[in-house]
Amino acid sequence: MVWTQVGSSNELVYETVTIPDVTGIMATGLYMVPFMPLWIAMPAAWVAAALTFEVSHDDTTYVDLFIGGSETSYTVAVSQAIGIDADDALKMGPYLKLRSGTAATPVDQTAARVLTIYARRIQS
Image (cartoon, rainbow, N blue to C red; front, side, top):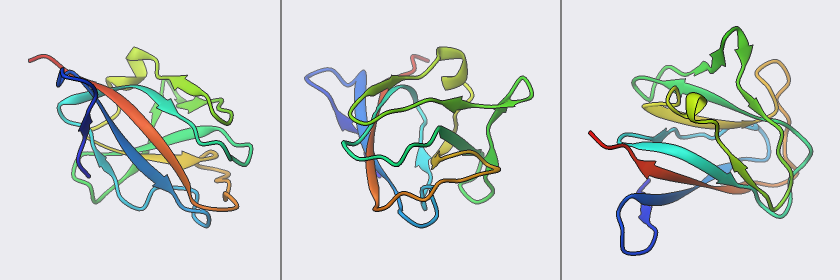
């Protein structure tokens, strides 16, 4: 996956990702370095479900993202931009997968859903 630059600045980028209809989770992780997610643009069609995350250090072994003992979960709706809390964003990576539903109850979509993740370059 290759991040696409927004406008003339390379500070803001986006990448489209697909959540398949059957498994409810991205098949391939998104490499987040050196970016921090800002918001996720939801598609025009979405079976009601929370949006949750898996993270990995090596793009092989993924674990569910829990912060403070609770699964990191966002309430989402069709055709909305969902802001990612900065504290959550700093914990998302270096590899990230999005899931429809929770770890305990993934939700199958009726078709593959394409979401767009917008991110900002992290200054070193």
